[in-house]
Image (cartoon, rainbow, N blue to C red; front, side, top):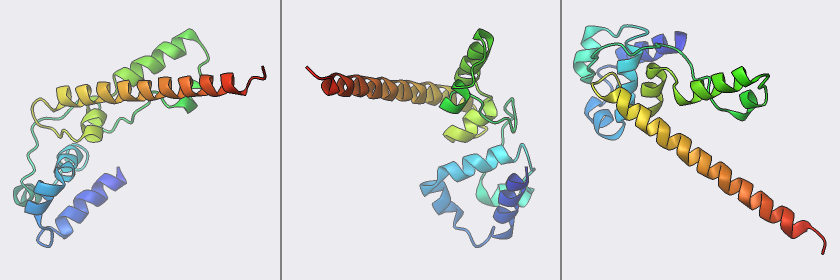
Amino acid sequence: MIWAADIVGFADAYLTSIDWERVRREYPFVLSTLSLLHCLAPIPDRVLKVTGVRVSGTPEGVAEDYYGWPWERARQWDSLRGRFDLLARTLDPSEWWLRMNYGTGTGRGGGWKARALHGAALMRHGMDLMQEARAFARERREERPI
């Protein structure tokens, strides 16, 4: 929570020093992040006006972190229920986290876009894991003595 207040405070403190048009053009993720941080630490109206940040609604799961797939958690599977819980958290993290992670802000359609991007990222990760497994299997076959 403190880092959200720090970012909002930074935007307010340097409001007139920052080239917000350039930020909008080159770093749209920053404005998206500000719109979502508004759900945690309300941004002053003057900052919203100057930055052009639009806040349209509050996504579910504000401030919830991602508790999905990493290997560290997968190694701690203790039951079938634990495996299903990890799968559910991997495929369906909080909307706020999705929007924050994929830069879709609070705008309309941002939740669907973030879910699509998350699905694509999981597919890429799965494909990378399959390639690594194939490479490992090839190396193991090549190491066997004849």
